[in-house]
Structures are given as C-alpha cells and as structure tokens.
Length: 315
Image (cartoon, rainbow, N blue to C red; front, side, top):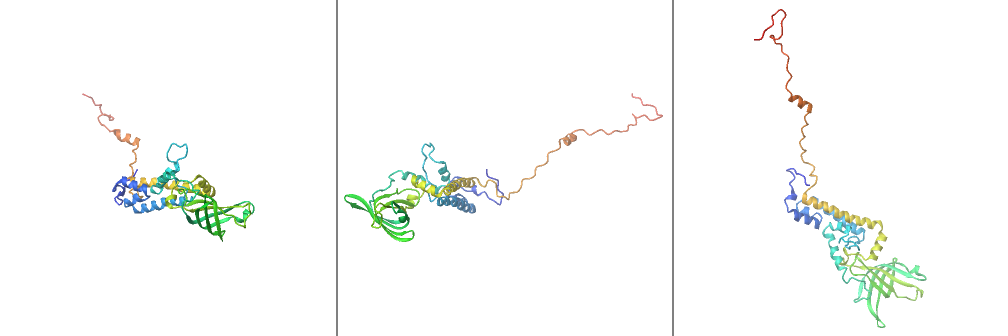
C-alpha cells in the first residue's frame, strides 16, 4: 500500500495512467518509472535488473533463458521460466523460439550449399598414436557437397592453428551440422579428416566444434539435450548461479512494477512524524474526579452545647 506523501513530494505515480505505467515497467525494467518522470528510479531499476539478467545469461553461455515445458507437467510454463518472464521483453523471444524450434529444425548430414565460416573446436583422434594428433583447433572451415561415385559426400579444408601451430586439414567423409535453431551462439559441427600418409592406417581423426550461429537463431532458443548436458557438466555450479541471477531479476522486476503502480511502500523518509497520542487517564483519578467532594465539618453553634448554656429546643 502506498504512503501519504508530503507537499514537497508530488505523487508522480498518480499523475500518469497506472495501467500504461505498469505495462511499460514489465516490458522494459524502469520504463514505467521513466514514463512517470521518476528518472532516478528508472535508471536504478534498469541497471540492476538488466545487469542481473544479462549477467546470468553470459555466465550460462546463453543456455539459461528458454521455454520448454517439462514432460508430464500440466502447467505450460516451468517455474524458472515464469520467473524469467517477469523481466518482460528480454525473455519474450523464448516463446517464439520454442515454436520455431518445433518445425523443421533438425541436424544436417548433407550440405545443399557451400559452407565457409570461422571454426572453433577440437581435433580428436582414435586408434594408435592418437594422443599426438589431438589439440585445440581454430581457423576457417570450407565445405561443399561433392559426388563420390554416385554418392553425395562432403569435402573441404580447415586452415588455421592446432594448439597455436599452423595447420591445414583435408576434410571429407562423415559430416554432421547441428540444427540451425538452438541455444548458444555456436552451431555444432563434426566432420572427418581425410587420412594422409603420416597417419597410422588404423587411426581416425575427427574435427568437432562450432561455427557461428546467428543471433536470431540463438537468443532464448531451447537447447539440444546433448549440448545442454555438456554445458552444465562443464560449468557446474556456475550454471546454477547463472539461472538464479535471471530468476532474481524477474522477481525484482515484480517489485519494481508494484512501486511503479502503487508508489513507494514506505514513503520518502522525510514525512512529518505523527502527533503523539495523549496518555490514557488514570482510572483511579477519574473515579476520584467524578465523586462528590467530601463534606467539611462545621462548627454549628446551635448544635453544639456550650457549657453553662441551656439546650435549644425545636419547635
């Protein structure tokens, strides 16, 4: 409930449409206060709430905010996403991304157009002498579909560095490109390395990593189960803390919306103190005041006999 303000503090939240202010405060933290002319609180709420929300997203590598109803749950929103939804506009794309991800969002095993993109990942090797071939890969990957004896194949090269040393790999054979829509700004990619004369005949090398995923396809999109498991395993408690940050941001925005519509809950801190209440009357004193005054003894000469004087008679 809002407090009564002193004449030096006009009730700005009552000078604007409270419904419009509340909707703005939900869509963008602080926007409702800015609409009311309460600039300091608008900046304070925006910085604090959005700082928590975006900070949590970055800590969780953008896998934290998404909408996916758990199996067997009758309520359409999970408790975590319901809290995130209170932040407003920054979380609303998750509803759209959830619908987009349900339609024709599958991994690709054959390219329909050439692919040329930056790559970050690992070179993994299996078989004899595989330990020497492993390392961190960074560079530019170029792939295209090729006809290999009537069978469509994926061929290309990766030029970059392996553990900081220049390397150029010839790629071909098994190929998989993750779904176009998914959490995180990296789209998973796996492709086999063509065996050369320096490898052991029984050794197999595979390039595993990611290429950039567009903001529209990545932001607030539901993650693939395998990718989510990998992120939670790698980040551990940091991922849980990232989730809490986004939940707290939503709960704080609920308080900000209430303040925007109803005004400050505890006033401004400089209101005049209430007048002191009069002390209650003492019951004994009240009884004494109501009782008749005690009679004072009087010397009545007619009733008091004087020695030697005759007694008076009535009648």
